[in-house]
Image 1 (spheres, rainbow, N blue to C red):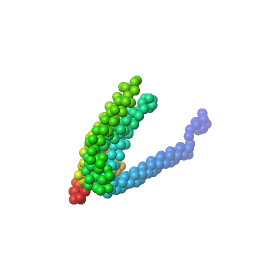
Image 2: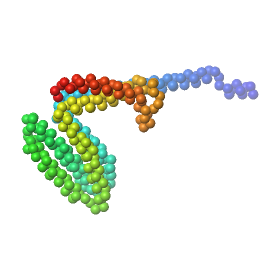
Image 3: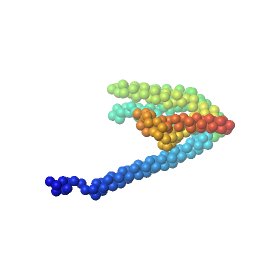
Image 4: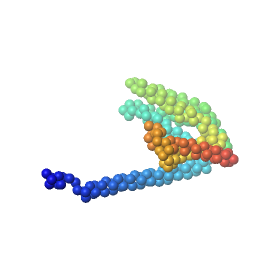
Length: 261
């Protein structure tokens, strides 16, 4: 019995070896975690820096390019929204219906932005070739809308009415959300880039500082989770972002307001 006990009982050397192996594995895991975190910070810093450079380059380019960039973003958002209710099997049975959604979008965009484009074209000689169309942009918009409506009716297909009307309604709601509520953004841009730069840069500053404040101080002051749906967010990042955003907005708005944009 004594012999069996000595044979089955682990020796101190084997226990020490297991402990050393576990420590090495834990150290390797911690090192890998730190390296992954450092890599993530590096990538986000580089990408964020490039985006900030692009944003400032856009401001330097001028009012027209800022307005076109806003329209470009709206186009991407509309593309995502109409894809939400896309059913491939149904769309194959309806010719040109997908195209008609874009006809409605560009008709609304031309109507919404035609007035300030007309004013901009009158003030800039390089845009004068567009004046004949922009001068009558309300009439052209009416023709655009009428054509879209007629084509929508002609594309109605028996057996697909319910799906087509649902898609058409979704298209109108998407246009209203994307173009309707942004109707006067371009007017603000042409009244002064200040009205575009300050709100946009405040949001950018808030997002950047929330990340770094959360990274440096996260869960060191407040242990309570910030949001259950976003477990990586912290109270430290939230309050830190508020402080830095208020400071940035106060200083930068006073400085930029002195520039004739």
